[in-house]
Length: 194
Image (cartoon, rainbow, N blue to C red; front, top):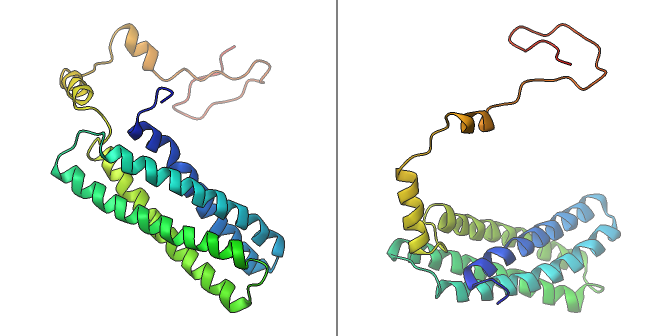
């Protein structure tokens, strides 16, 4: 699949809906605070596209679950991540459909209810991302066991900076841009170099 397997595709797709949906809610809040209809009009397509992106992220995540090496701890975290993802998709999917059919006819109370549901959806979305991050950074989910074993072996050998490699990683000396007039340097900083 164009060089992507399901876990990598899920990693590629999962950030877009989060950004779009959170931004949609942000614009809805701004619209409420400023009473500017134009801001609400910006939030609506963000919500629609973000919800479609959430479908793609959830589908790729469900597929990825069956294609990664994992034990019981990863499985439990994956199940929690999946539940939060499905709830997020449900909240924003219903809101997108609701606004698709009711956007031009909503009264103040109905609009307030959708904003409250959106804020709840953002909370669930953050929980989804939290568990997704735990899967990756605490459990190395999605990294094949062979690759992980090779990396652990390499890390156990250590990495030392010395010789030419040390120069490569050293902080560069401070050099003022050409044409900068000489000035006194505070203690502990190098003098002007041309």
